[in-house]
Length: 231
Image 1 (cartoon, rainbow, N blue to C red):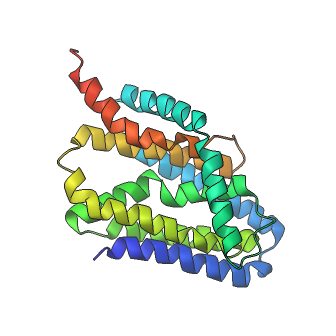
Image 2 (cartoon, rainbow, N blue to C red):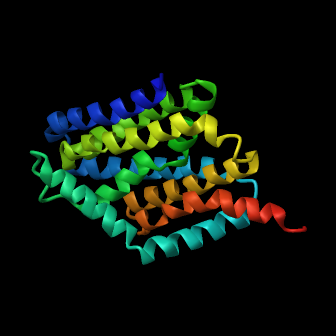
């Protein structure tokens, strides 16, 4: 039973609902201040994940190649288009939505190193502690962003469940195929994406977050190739 996965996704779902209901009581100034604060929190979580790296070179190579592939495939625009169609199909007033900001939040919820590692850990050991801890941060993050974006934030819980659920179910199969070194680099790569998302959320720097997603697939391969080199 994926207790941590369900708890984390429920936090986003109900956080979005609570933020939609009570968001009108949060002033614009408070919302902006909290957005920057949560962005810096995401940077801190990303840094913590990055510190797990076993070798920086394969992580950097995966990011360079992954972002290049994502950019050539226009992955971020495709993800944006997918979510736009999904939101338009639902009875939500999403025409005013800042999709660039929305996709950044999607990546923070669905592709953070913390969330990926937590899902794999629960799938392998059955321990939901990491995802339950993440749920507390995600609950308040969802509340704040739903104040401006409404129920569209709650919608993120569904792709998040698909991603984390797939990781949970495949964890036992994946773990023998990925070395401890590759797993640490995988988490570090997710941490860099989380840090980039936090900086973008805090409006410190803009990154093509969606285009970076292929790096998560490439980093285990880059790590395995790196370990084959004779030095």
